[in-house]
Picture 1 (tube, helix red, strand yellow):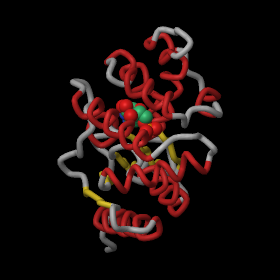
Picture 2: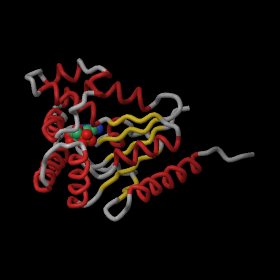
Picture 3: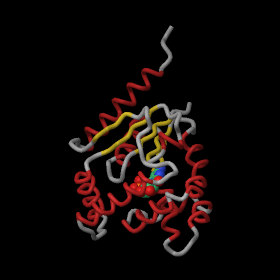
Picture 4: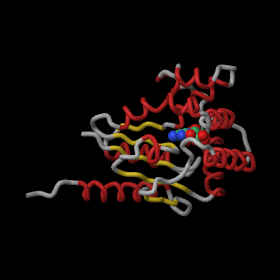
Length: 209
Ligand code: C5P
């Protein structure tokens, strides 16, 4: 049976970590849709046309080692503002979302555009300062040299571009539950997400005769 969990939110709010943990908990497949835009953006850095790059994307591109760099993140957010790029990536995401056995997709427009019919929609967010500190720790852990100021500027530039674009801007779906993780540990954020999903699953379950 298909069951889709849409998890959206700004950069470094914790949605990737929450999504992976939720997918593991329920035994669902997980797609980090940011990787589609990062893989597309990465190809444009060597001069490839963004729309051609999106259309030519293959699964192996999502495994490239350097997709997490700030340079690729900025390229991702630039190509993500091009409607033809977004259009080229829609079918893959929708097919993934409706696969048998359940799916968790995280991104910016999953609850609003890709899967408006998702059974559960979460919007995971956190204060800028908290997000910048978390992303700095993540990048430093991967030996990617940067500073707090650079990380904060990167997040704010991307959030502004992602929120202002005409096509599929970053915003919570009207029926999304907002999860502010600013003062939560990872375990607390995951527990809150699982509690919300359990609540929705039992509300949707057919009543026993
Ligand atoms: O989630 P992540 O930070 O990896 O996303 C990189 C960029 O890809 C975002 O800044 C955003 O511009 C774009 N993106 C998007 N829609 C999605 C997922 C990511 O526009 N569903």
